[in-house]
Length: 234
Image 1 (tube, rainbow, N blue to C red):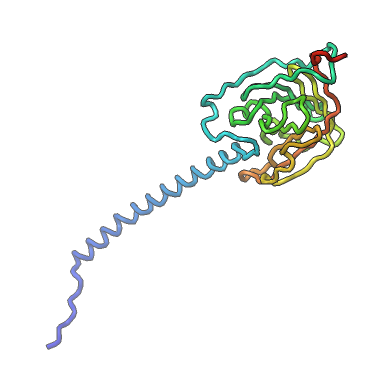
Image 2: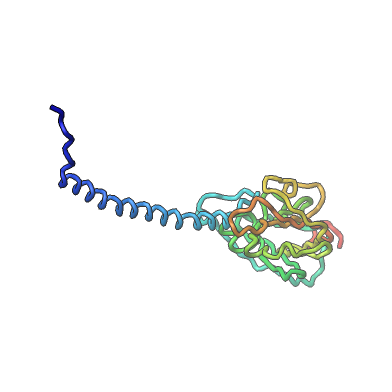
């Protein structure tokens, strides 16, 4: 005698359907939670990437406030006394404001700090410690964020005048060229034999960090020290 198939018990089918009904909303809840978490994290990551732009200075990745002493100085931009072509240079400490950068053509007037950290970039422009202190021969390299102090750097033109004021002198430059370059291309930020000023920033990118840089290269036209070197004639 052949055995016939027995139909599935109604109670068993009911339990299976109940489990499926309970699990489906739970899985959907977990999935929605994961999507919400990712959506919240991604904009934050993009914002952090944009703000912490990878400038080619010795950028400090640790807590920018840890052990950092920020010193603000009063910089005289209206010195009326006698000046000298050679003079005494005051070497700044890391985190010290030692200059004021001015360019009338773009209404720029910004403090310059020695060294680069996120905290200093919030306060002004920063000079790479691998570049020369103002007054010494070579390449003075200064950067700032494109969304703050160097927002109009790309509006500067060849022939514009740029002045850097310090506590010990005034240094005047003339824009000689503007260039764009990749962040891995360091030819514009390395030491040079000629006296120049290099101002640079990121090229604005609203979708995240940018690998492109915009630079203004300036040639030195005047050194004006406030205090002469010992033994120097005026």
